[in-house]
Image (cartoon, rainbow, N blue to C red; front, side, top):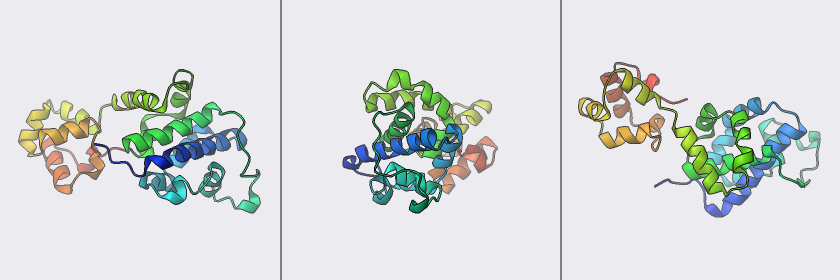
Length: 211
């Protein structure tokens, strides 16, 4: 069962605020969308969203999130933060669905960004923006999880089946399956688990960690 960082009652605001931030950054400030996506994914704002900090999830508008991200003071702001978007752009949708996907699957924005370019996400707009967010997120999840984990790549390079790795390492087969399916984050695995896997696979722990 996925543990969500914040209550669903906050989700609509979180999605709209992140959507506004992406639209504002790319369409008003002309930020490179790939650069902006990476800047956000590796930022403290992304971390606070992942933690469910209400000051960021619902306490700041999209404009305020942008200003905070780039350390722009309110007196230097170029637009009134109360301006409402008349129509929702594809860039808005990208931020909107990213907020939902992060919440629904409890995966870091950094992990999402490492596997999904903004250009690719934009290319999905035409086919996904008219369906509900849960279905759109399921499509994204299927695409993201099709990429094999580092654990799976190294295991296969050693010509080991998952059951064999479990037997040799002492790590349960279920745990190995969950790490390879990205249902559990290997970056958060116990040190003894990582040591056992790395010894068995003749690699260093860092080789098993996801970016």
